[in-house]
Amino acid sequence: MNDDLIIRARRVVLEDHVAPASIHIRDGRITSVRSFDQVDNAGELIDVNNESVVMPGLVDTHVHINSPGRTEWEGFETATRAAAAGGVTTLIDMPLNSIPPTTTTRRFEAKLAAAKSNCYVDIGFWGGVVPGNTRELALLKREGVVGFKCFLVPSGVDEFPHVTEQDLREAMPELTRLDALLIVHAELPGPIETAALNKDAADKYSTFLSSRPKKAENDAIALMVRLSREFGTRVHIVHLSSAEAIPMIREAQADGVKITAETCPHYLHFAAEEIPAGATEFKCCPPIREAQNREELWSGLQDGTIGFVVSDHSPCTASMKLRDTGNFLEAWGGIASLQLRLPIVWTEAQKRGYGLSDLVKWLCSGPAKQVGLQKPKGRIAEGFDADIILWNPEERFDVEASNLFHRHKISPYVGENLSGVVRKTFLRGRKIYDGREVEEPPGGMFLLN
Ligand SMILES: [Zn+2]
Image 1: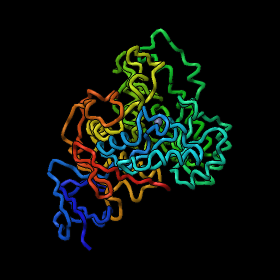
Image 2: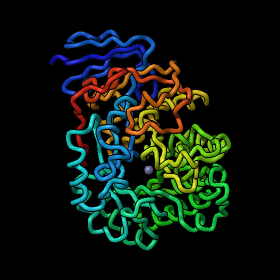
Image 3: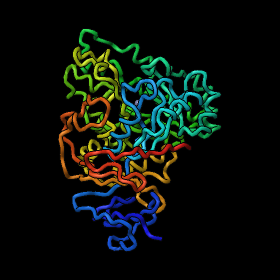
Image 4: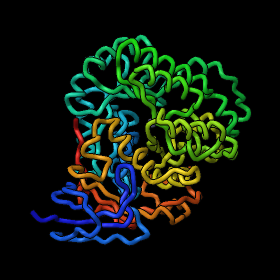
């Protein structure tokens, strides 16, 4: 049988190394990865220039699309276009900030109806654990959610209430029975409620930072370690910010507790000391912390305690960021970065001596495995989907609002100088981004477990 397409390059990022190779593709799948010169049988041959690297498409398992119901914040069309332009070929939508949230099968159907025919990349969905919905979990799992998210503090939206330990004691045995992954926004209310707060200096980043102390995260993670151990539930800590919790997670993992963690580009790139007064585009929860904390997060990634890096793309309208008053305590928390995760992480990884194979683990295969997509997503290998990007890791660029495909262009990255430009994105063998435009029509598929 002939291949439809062969992509060959001098630098292809494979499992543990970078090598010259030709990638053979038929019907959207990689049929084989061969030597650079084995290129007969091609319907079409793409010879990649020497400046570009060929890598698996990125997988982002932490994206808030906010549709249906809050499409003025983002939406399937705008978010998945931004994904395509950022080299992301698979994303998983969070269960909250949409109205309704994904906490019952009826609500999940509303979500699927909103997403249908509007996605430029492949997409899966998280369900939610909220007080009282334990009986829905098996049904949602059967309908194909990849796992379930809960909050241990108020989520910021009324329709997605947080859970207490008592609620988790009801839900976790059911999650274990279903072998479902529970992902947790790990901050506890207590340390936040008792934090000293200088409301007269609400435009100072330090005011906001001290309102969300590390202790809130550390205590929440200790609770989740304890409950995971007790119930045998697979638990994952989303957007880890407090590096103080890393030793505790490492010890639990060594002890056989089924607990994993992710962190996000903003915690690895920015430092609290450098955030200007009133710059509410930097607000997110848990917060960006000090430079020293950032370096400890990098160490946690290096030793594998933190498994991977996802965007936590959480946009809102520009007015909700209250940039005019710069009030950190009142502004909406959330950072938009879906399109920029590759250059942010690469810019910082390079400085610290990491290579392209580390990127594949952190941005592609690691997140794919989290949601059970370790096959067919996240690697360039025989039998995998031909989700492939061409990008130039040496080229630097200034982030400009006008180049972002997100619905709203407000982001702390605007004005940053980053390394790594995405040239082309292929989804299952079809080019969906050419370096300028996202190609029509949207051809993303639902990934239902
Ligand atoms: Zn989030």
